[in-house]
Length: 334
Image 1 (cartoon, rainbow, N blue to C red):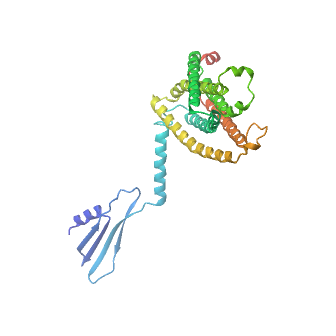
Image 2: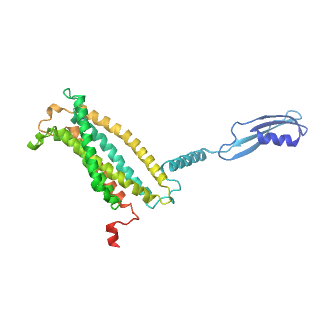
Image 3: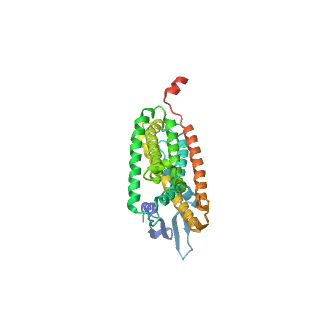
């Protein structure tokens, strides 16, 4: 066997056994490896076997020197790169305006608080609608919800007509106002079971239902929130997309919102189950003159803590938003 053949086997194989007799190659057996492209360093080792007369056995083996730490670092780097490509615009941080990451962090925090508060308030809305009440009918609930949504649509049209000329000039103000509307709507939802138990004023008796009035007000607030947030979102996206990457910035914001929604869903399910377990332990027969059960007190405490965090995150996030455009108030300062 020639030297060229030997080197060809060395390059293509991961393990070769060579039997030498009087300095000449008598037999050569090799085994190839299915994956020689592993990340890391490779080294060659030669082992001379025991003598058997005039024959000597030379074993050559290619050894993979990849350590566990190197593999862990490689996996971590890949995960970090995947997360960067999935949630941050291409070319970050040079492709977006200053303060992008801070604003998105506080915006995600307030979104998470809103999702969790929605879980708490939805339970109160369903209880006020008659879920679990044998006298309540599905048709009456459906009619109430349809009328409520109709009021919300009409109110949204009127609000858009009056406020739309001012959205571009007051982006930060309307962005903050959107979450104030949302806070009011969610608070009304949570307070529905309590408000319906109170003695209503005489002028409310002319309305079809106090529940319809309260849910319509809550829906109006949520519609106003959606209009304000949607109208200002485009301006904020344009502010951060300094490299002509508006579509990319908008897409990455959607992926961030999806992640926050998934986190809120997981946490919300756990919170709802915990509150449900507490409701089973409540003794409603001993309620007496109290307006709320122990579970309702806990729900309100959680709701108020989340609301404070929500307002704080919105305020700080809006402060981090340094717009480059001029409105009337900024022009007067100049």
